[in-house]
Length: 367
Image (cartoon, rainbow, N blue to C red; front, side, top):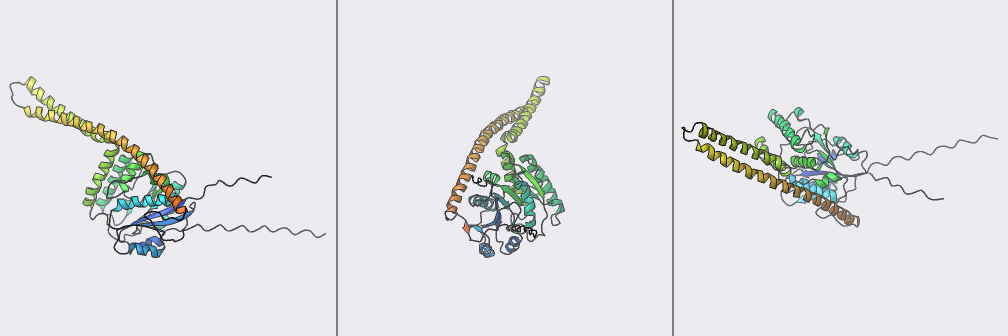
């Protein structure tokens, strides 16, 4: 009799929860203790801390708490760099799923399972936690309005249905992690959504609750500063992926302005020749038309660069996947992952299901 074929059922996915930190010695213990130790459908869970140049001993506290992996920068490099370093480390550590959360315990660990559900079901590549900013008590009215307008702008630029574009509470599958790249030095939240939409990744919203505010934001000190730093990020990302729409619209406006001024000059020159002047309309009109054609050439050049960029991103994504596979092979041989300090803390595994009790055999009838 032939033995049955070995089971080919895939093993449950590995989840890594990454937490960017900057001087979070005080808040990290509460955030870490709130994380779920088991999630239905997930095989093992590990926690990765990205220490962005902390000076208060955040990494040491993380190791004492039992955090599994630590990436430490010798000096502050910014949230965007910390986020990307975390994603690269997660790939090399063999993560199938990645959840990004904040160290100040703004987001609730109990919501991670709900955040992961669409990704586990294959219905989304990225899920974004919707904080329902209109209901957050410590948000001023102007911040709520800007959040609403900003999310609407990102929805239009990215082609995704995101409702809370600045939320850092996100879940991603391995495909999304290897596809996203952040190029600005400020934040990852907006640029990655625009990239995700351009790459055809499926983005979904998950309604979440937030914990009370514990401290002021370290990313920006005021709303004007946030707008000053994030506005160019959105424009650059949009112009990078849609250069024809961005510069083509501006070129069209300049050409129309130039033609209008030229028409004004011709009107007076042909119909009222006795009235002298209006040469300024001709000069400005010619300048506007010439500038419009120059901007139009910029749009065409930008389109060529955007095509080249997409090819480079696809190649870079493949290189990252290959690098991750090589790193996992080295890790399987007991070698350390470059740039990652693994503390040796055991992974969080789901509790084994209790074995069914053996059925009792009926007693035989006496003869």
